[in-house]
Image (cartoon, rainbow, N blue to C red):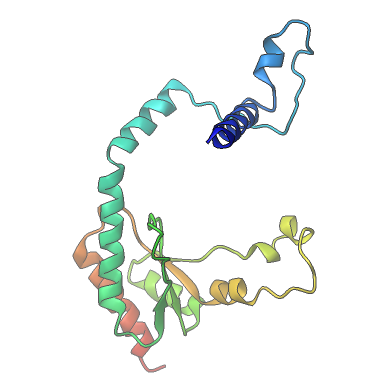
Length: 186
């Protein structure tokens, strides 16, 4: 138990240093030490009073927001479950996802579906660009490794509207429009 307490104290101290731009506040306050001497990488993650007030307000309604997002996910799955071109990600049993985005994978050309949905006033977006394809991260990767999963998800993944306040009939309209695209003869 003592080990856990000591480990938590070390983690807490390190996080405080990271939060405070890499400055060790104890050393900073000690007049014999160097001023503004960074002992680690750091960030400026301190909040203003206004940011804290907004954050506190959001935390008070977090459960309501998360429950609404779960309902959105259930409705999308309900209305798209019969579509043979679409699949959904599977959540780990122990996980409790926040459903920030609801993403599908589809066996159709994503760019065509995005244009089709736009014609009907439905905004959607492809999932995030794979890190292995970005210049900033490429240099850290083994060039012999193939990232087939992330590249496949990027080619076939589409995030649908999930904003709080979206109505059941709007989700049904989005799903019906996707079905129309999938089964329409071209």
